[in-house]
View: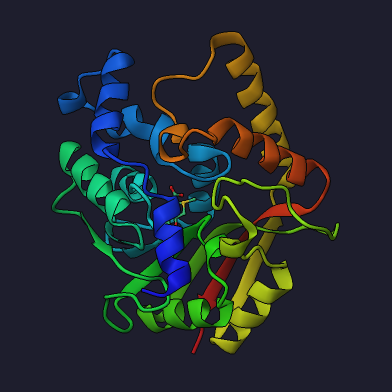
Length: 278
Ligand SMILES: C[S@@+](CC[C@H](N)C(=O)[O-])C[C@H]1O[C@@H](n2cnc3c(N)ncnc32)[C@H](O)[C@@H]1O
């Protein structure tokens, strides 16, 4: 693991996460041992818009029970459980942070997905999976921690079978230049944040032999989503189960800074879908 990767994994390690998720479920009135995929949704999709964003992306990807899915930077496996539950696909999740992989495995075991999914510690730049072993790779809010976009796209392209699809949803640079406000959900400091413009992604994809199919600016969706979140917080306070469990004590500041960067046009949550044609 590189020094940057170590620092990134450290950022995402908050301690005793599985126990805290179980406790949050209990505090929400849910028996953790009887929790469903839907019960976990409030706290297991660590990206802008949560499951609403996952819905939007997967509606365009349309996997089936026969699709072999790779979840790059899977976190605690929310998206992986979504795709097993919704489409009955088989999923392999890879993530840098051991604690998140441990929690992903525990939660997927809990909901009875152990025969359809597996989670492994590894870098997106060197994934412990075979060449051409997947029909669909997805990556939600991971590229902001990876400087080497060319290496990332090259590695994803290696894992895809010909005709395979890569769908991603990342926070990219917006039209407005300038330093970002930190801390942010993916990084406390600028040193481990690599937010790039959409063209950096497009160029890296082209070099890796991936053809752009669609690109969607999700700024309006993100603004609306956070307006709703802040309105609910003002009324009810934070719910026991939420992605704040993975964000440490500075979670409120990270959310505020995200919205500040978003509303000033310095960041742009963006979906992209690519095909491996060759
Ligand atoms: C904001 S979270 C998103 C997690 C998940 N994709 C989701 O949407 O719930 C970013 C994740 O990327 C992982 N990550 C960051 N850099 C990575 C790398 N180089 N290789 C693999 N995973 C990485 C982190 O450990 C973390 O789990």
